[in-house]
Amino acid sequence: MRKVCTLFVAIMLPLFFQSHAFAALPLTLSQTLQLPGEVKGHFDHLAIDIKGHRLFTTPEDYKSVIVFDYVTGKMVHNIKGIGMPHAVLYREDVDRIFVTDGDPGAVRIFDGKTYNLLKSIKLLAHTDSITYDPASKFLYIVTGGKQAQQEVSRIDIVDTTSESSIGDIEIEGDALEALTLETRTTKLYVNNTSKNRVDVIDRDKKMLIASWPITLAQNNTSLALDEANHRLFVGCRSGTLVVFDTSTGKEVQSLPMTKGVDDMVFDSASRRIYASCGDGPGFVEVYEEADPGHIHPLAQIPSGPMGKTSLLSSALHRYFVSVPQHEDKNAVVLIYDVN
Image (cartoon, rainbow, N blue to C red; front, side, top):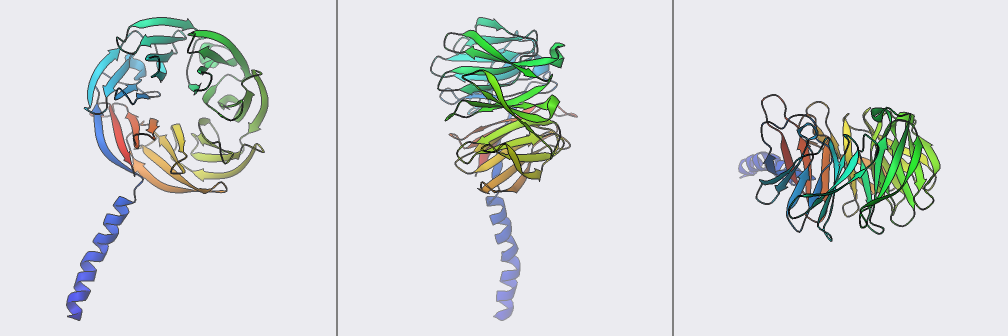
């Protein structure tokens, strides 16, 4: 009997740990959206329409925004006529799609039902990353810089209700990347990549109020914010996650990550940070905030080469990653269940 019990434990114990290890993964791949074979090159940032089951993807070289029904997996529309799509905002309340077009530099506004172009707001060339204030309905947009052959950059402000430009904030430095904002204050954070620092802006005063040097890494690209606990997470393409205390402006921690990060998000419900990194085979780096003073790596989830742009839907418990065409494989959007 003892031999039988020993044999049972020897067989079942590894299976038990394997099954629990699988169940413990923070992300599990559940669906793959296939893009046409002619879609080549990099993707930029995604957006989602939860009520309409739509996912908006941005293949830059394809000069369009491809719209999927993420429930059926079908491509439902191809919004053409965009020089260089970078980021998308969907406003459900007015059924409008706002797309930043880097070439020649504009915000394109499309009807959410017909996909017809309604208006273009001219901005500087290299109109790129965005962040949105749901209270004011203002869209903050990175423009200008070296790709626009300018020595300075700008953050342009578009009122998405009046559909008009209402001002800008000039920033010293010729390369800005991600932005994020606090909802309880008027602070806006932007990655000033050319200066290797985080710039802090007062949205009401439209002026720079602080600059925080990054000493623990290089090439700061992505941002995520835990506003409640005063933590700003800075993803750097040199292969480091740097954590700032927003109450002091000081670096408090750094952790390794796969190089090539582009999008990063903090999920307050699970206290996790998700970062899509495109170098090598491509990974989603997942970190957990045990408490504001202790961030630790949780998992490294395979994605795909150059899979550096992503979107988390906390409402759907799903995480989307765009993976460009590589080798003999067409471009795809990977959909993970958040566990």
